[in-house]
Image (cartoon, rainbow, N blue to C red):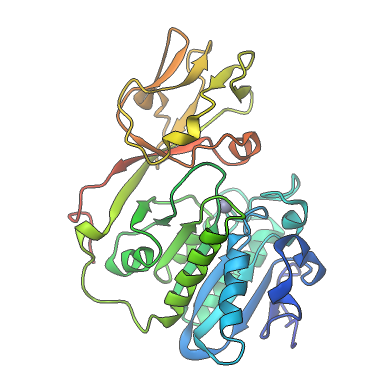
Amino acid sequence: MSGPYESHSRMLSVFENLPKDFLDTPARELHRLLRGPTLIHLPGRREPPLFVSVLLHGNEDSGVVALQDVLRRYLDRPLPRALSLLVGNVAAAREGLRRLDDQPDYNRVWPGTDLHGGAAEHAAMSEVYRAMQARGVFASVDIHNNTGINPLYGVVNRLDPAVLHLALLFSRTVVWFRGLAGSQTTAFSLLCPSLTIECGKAGNPANEAHAADFIDACLHLAQFPAHDVHEHDIDLYHTVATVRVPPAVSFGFGDTLADIDFDPRLDHMNFRQLGPGTVFGRSRLASPLDVRDEARRDVADEFFACEHGAISLRRASTPAMLTLDVRAVRQDCLCYLMERLPFPRHVTR
Ligand SMILES: [Zn+2]
C-alpha cells in the first residue's frame, strides 16, 4: 500500500492502492483502517476515472458493501475503467449515525456550500473535488440509503441525455432536483454527468447487489450514448418542495401529545400520487410545517392546509423519503414533494 500522499487538507487521506483488509471490513469498522475521509485512486483499462462516493452519511452503508462486491470481481484482472472512490464519514459510521453532533453533514460541505465554508470537512471535500477535476472525471455517483419505504431511484441536478442515461442504468425512477448547495452531486454536476442513487434501507442485500451491478455497468460504459432517452423508459419526477419540522415544534408518529402527530403509516405514501385533502397528521398549530421551494421561498400555505386540527395537502403531489425515523427528520427533512415532469420538452442538450 502506498501513501498516504501529502494532502493539503489535514483531514483527507489519499491512496493509490486499496488499504489492506478494505474489502473485508464493514462500514462500522472502517475507522480501524482509515483515520478519516479517504480518497482512493485505482487504475483501469480506460481513463478518465469514474468517481464514486460512499458513506457521506455514516449510517448509509450500501455503497461500501456494493463497492467491496465490485472490487472483489476484479481481484485477478484490471478494472474496465479507472475508479476513484471516496469513503466519507468513517467516524459517524463507527457510531451508526448519519453524522456526529459536532460534525457538519458531509453532503453539505462540497464546493458551493453556503453553510460550512470554514469547516475542515469543506477543505477536505474541496481537495477531492479539485483532484477529480484535474483527472477529468468521467462521471460521478454518490451512494445513499434512506429510512422510509422508497423504491430504488436516482436523483439528478440536470436533465441532459448523458445524465439521464447514467440514471437509467440504476433505475427507471429518476428525480430531478436542482439540488442543495454543497451537496456532492450539485458540485460534480458542473464537471461531469452526476447522479445520487438512493438504495432504499441500509442492510438489504438485494439493494446492495443492485448498486454493485450498477457500478460495474458504469465502469463498462465506454462513452455516453448520443441519442436521447425515451419517454417510455423513464418515470421522471421534479422535486418542487422540501418539508421540514421546525426545531421548536415537537412531533411523533401516533403521539397525541406532540405538537404534530403524524400518521404512523406516513412512509407508505412515498412515490404515490396524492390528491388534495390527503391527511399527513394532526396539529393544534396554525402552520406547523416549514415548506420551501427550490429557491428556498416559504411555500407552506401553497402545499398544506391546517384546518380543524388536520394537516392536509392543498395540491396534488408525490412525496419521497417520508420516514418514521425521528432523528432522520431532525437531521435532514420530513420529505420532499414532487410532481411528474412532462417529458421530453424539458430535456435539453
Ligand atoms: Zn444520505
